[in-house]
Image (cartoon, rainbow, N blue to C red; front, side, top):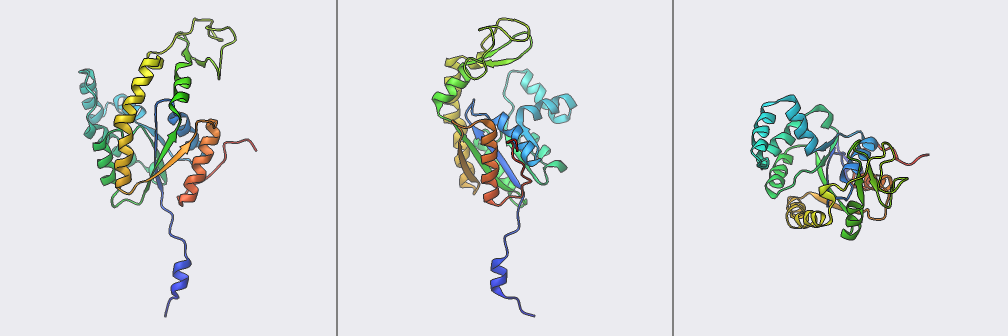
Length: 245
């Protein structure tokens, strides 16, 4: 029995589950985008901060080791952070794809993740949420927080009814330390010098890097655009638009 080579060539390549890494400067909307993408795809949104809190709450050996290091005022080393992420990627809910938010953050983490992908069925894709720095400054320095209830407002996009006071409890709003202009500028400089080179490291290892210009788009449109791009890449996605029908 013979097989027609044309038939073989016409068959689509089998779809592989996608491992999506969300990259972007502070204020680019990674957390919001990740949550919306979870609604669209059903994939778990894995933020390193949440994973760390989960390890600490469960008092796992890894969590206790990290707790000891963090209590001393040191940053968690790359190998421990990587082990924490790899442990979570082994859960059954990651088999059909997942979203990584905040990892990898250093070149050693990126090198380790690239090795982890070898021999596994996932197709890694890095999504860079690109926003102009002036827009990031506007987003972050305009934020205000209620110290009593934790509600977040923005001077332009979501102002309070009475300027400077919380709509719910009337408490005077404050500016978070991370939202002070000089702190925001420092965080952006750190991202440019330390975090963005991670994307170039992953690219050298064959990871597809896709940039999304999301400065002028609302969060729902950003999420829909990402799913559209991922679908064109050829990943297996269960899509559902965030827009109302």
